[in-house]
Amino acid sequence: MERVSSDTVYEGQVFAVRKDTFRSPGGSEREREIVDHPGAVAVVAYDDERFWMVRQPREAVGEDALLEVPAGKLDVEGETPLQCAQRELEEEVGKRARDWREVKRTYTSPGFADEEVTIFFATGIEEGDDAEGEEEDLEVVEVPLEELEQTIAVCRDAKSLIGLLLFAAERDSG
Amino acid sequence: MERVSSDTVYEGQVFAVRKDTFRSPGGSEREREIVDHPGAVAVVAYDDERFWMVRQPREAVGEDALLEVPAGKLDVEGETPLQCAQRELEEEVGKRARDWREVKRTYTSPGFADEEVTIFFATGIEEGDDAEGEEEDLEVVEVPLEELEQTIAVCRDAKSLIGLLLFAAERDSG
Image (cartoon, rainbow over all chains, first blue to last red):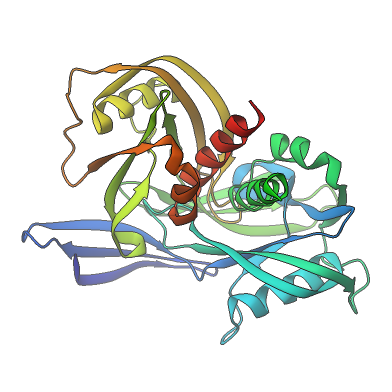
């Protein structure tokens, strides 16, 4: 599959839209509309007793307080996914973590968007400089580990579900 | 949170882009760029020995053969998510299922897209009319149940990961 042309048809603040033409090995051509997104990170941060979630308004899906793991866009030039995850955990939850492990890179909507989310497990939790996280409109939620399954049951955000389900699978197999 | 204005800034084949302005209960306004998508379905279809996956080119993420569960867009007027899932399983894999269970509704990218994916478990598998699925560029993959964990390890598609992880959790707890 080879890209033979690319036109930017919309240029926004958070993403752009391209119309790209691809040629298959057999020679046929197809056009695809693609949301061009910088990518994102998500963090399952936990200790022996709890893990941390956030609630925030998600206007795109009509939710006033969607429950998610700490996360954010790769929107700082030159920042790696790990650095972005460390920054987001401190900004959103007010915590740092000594130990970081990348557990999955996932495409959220590969049919029409290039967004890739890198999911980390973060342990060895310490207080950050921004005590408690200071983002407007964002509520930090400490969830006891015993409520992991109920949290998965009510969670609707894809990156969070993948992170929490991987976390649950590891706890069950350990 | 109340939407006070909405402008369509791009109108494509698969999705549109809107710029909407929202007013918070406190009175502040914010603008959001939103990918307006019809939504989709995904199916974990399995029997006592195997489950079914597909491989297909996903140009948006530069993959020639991305491994996913059978899935598709809600692009037929008046079709429910369940009807869409039944159609997609037959079109893509050439199978029907007697028993269907909705297990999750998930937002794939709630920061910038309204796409919601409804995930089903399908059992009681029977041959469909389109033997083996007849979509161009799509390869059907029968995976033995013993390879569920390896499949999760290599899978990168978000809706498929959620479906397979929920399936694995149910098998472990059963």
